[in-house]
Image (cartoon, rainbow, N blue to C red; front, top):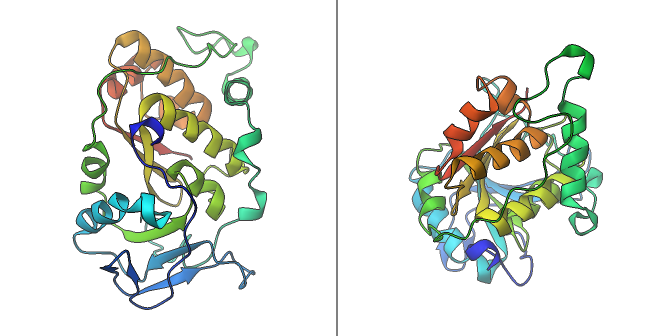
Length: 266
């Protein structure tokens, strides 16, 4: 399994609307999700309503992912607008490139360059400069097999099922639009998420309108490693640092040893 976690040999087939069985598990009432204006493309199955004991159901379905090829996600909606983005079909799978063709280090460097202020602003991201510092080292500590269920435990929402072979590909498969103010090709993000799966045992467990929730089975354990990971997080989602932390070192302290990463794009 990638990152000592979750993978499937092949992507599964979406269940039918209603209350289908998946690997012997009866699901709550649900429906198929189509991108807006494309009634022929089915990208996900989701429950019609928020699920009671969602963490328990998520844990059961993630445990059979290797057999079903259907990755479970906690789906949250835009605050005050429960129909967005899922019921409205605010999804663009056709905009996703192939993650296989992405050089992760080069892509993060490009995003870093896009997000770092111009030198004239005098606001370089200390202790880093204008150049991306490079990929963080792979973490080799024990994999916390309970991290994913712990990350899901406090996430309310609906249940979604996406046919993929690894969780990282879910954002590209459905054509999620959460980081739209920064980039629209989710194949690029999936490539980065694959790398995080491999290096940190980090897996997407929940998606909102513009939020992403990731469980981390091997989080950075030292100040130096956490700082290097913080740089990658900034490249992917600068709002995590600019709006949610005082400095890179403060942000690094927040994620050091932590079993869940949360991202929010303005």
